[in-house]
Image 1 (cartoon, rainbow, N blue to C red):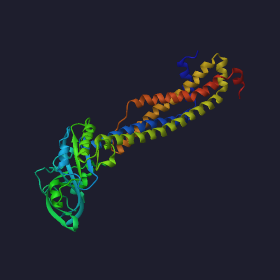
Image 2 (cartoon, one colour; image 1 turned 90 degrees about the vertical axis):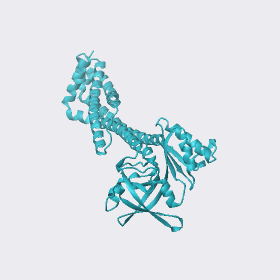
Image 3 (spheres, helix red, strand yellow; image 1 turned 45 degrees about the horizontal axis):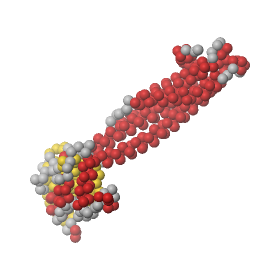
Image 4 (cartoon, helix red, strand yellow; image 1 turned 135 degrees about the vertical axis):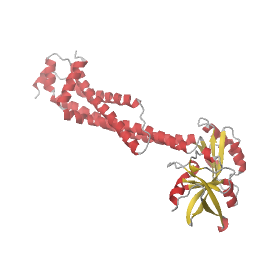
Length: 404
């Protein structure tokens, strides 16, 4: 019976004698394993990146949008404020306005909010402070507005003129004192529909006073914790639906409600589903590469059987059994796949690190991909080596020695 150590030694000798052939044989495995490892690692990195980006937009946020004009008023604000589990809520009123600074005019989104918006939306100030509920004609401006929009930079204590257009073509202009500059997030997701980098925040009572209105377009609320955000969001939904005369059986029918509501957990779930679908697709493509690699190993091993027919005959004449020959060729196939798997792990992790560094993403890789990569390589080696090994083992010594 051929010992495993002997089988490994003979297999390594055969591999070393044909370095180019062995290298080309493992190339498919290297590419397949590297692709699987890199895609899994990148999938984890993107998941964490999106979660961090969404979390940066607000703490356990719940966003309620009106689908009809003149829908939300102070009554709806009180309903949300009194909902158990709500730790803060800010009404929102948005309007495109003309902003004048040193005789230069720009059209900019004006967002009316309350002081609670600073906490609920995780607002961080680059300089100065955010608006408070005691302010009237004060403003906090986005980083891009302060530093890029106008020829001159706007800083805290600067004054800007904001002009809003009313119905009938009338306009109203007020002067606002800038209290601070909001720090940029450079994020693609904008919490509450407000892009803080290119918006100007003013008290919601002031913007309503200027527009001669008293309604709100949305609410940006915060639950006590992320674990409770879905439960609290459902409670807010039920209370608002009852307020607008929507029956409980129509709660799940978005068309039956004059508003829409979603929360941080909903966004995270959608992002994770999208990310998982993309990752699974890429892994499936990588698995095709593995299949191609395993076929390559099988072909090379079949060629090897043909090239080493006389050698097989001599080994059988010397007393090696069919089982010994079977083990020998399977071991050689496993060694090739294992080497390709290890190299593929290194290439895959290195590639994932390079991509995450270039995209400024967190570099993550689950530890299970090491075990999975080696296991897949061994399975590929065994699967690809069985048929050639079986063919070699079935050769008779006389036929093998007569082969030319």
